[in-house]
Amino acid sequence: MPAPFRALLGERCYLTVGENRCIDVLTAEAFEATVQGLSDRVDRGEVELSRLRAVTHNASVAAIDRQGRVKVDERLRSYAQIELPSKVLVAGSGGRAEIWSAAVYAEEQARTDLALARGSR
Image (cartoon, rainbow, N blue to C red; front, top):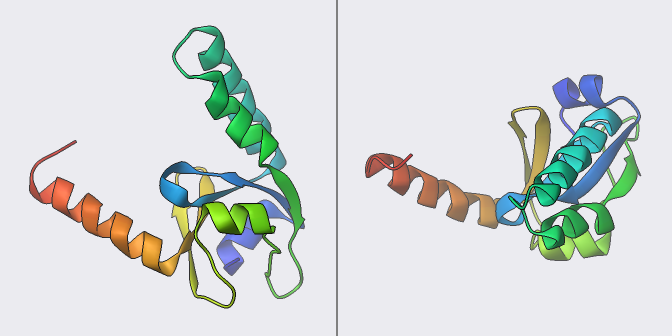
């Protein structure tokens, strides 16, 4: 984890599945708020229960070592298409960080750039 993220996360963080094959990195408070928000949306019929299950069943608490390293379990690495040893990218996204396979991030960025160029929202 880059130093600015470590300052916000402290010694531990939550890792879980994110959108578009990334891994979301959240503080305990942000994780609890995310779960509560998804639960509320499930109750209102806006989100499928499977989305809430994916976030909660795949979540893990991770310790951040003194060098800023975080161990990502195999299940999340597989979801994010991160193979060992491969390069990853850590990016900020609002109130959370995201861990990406460098290759998957490049593909996602290309799709985003194309959508922006076409005027999509």
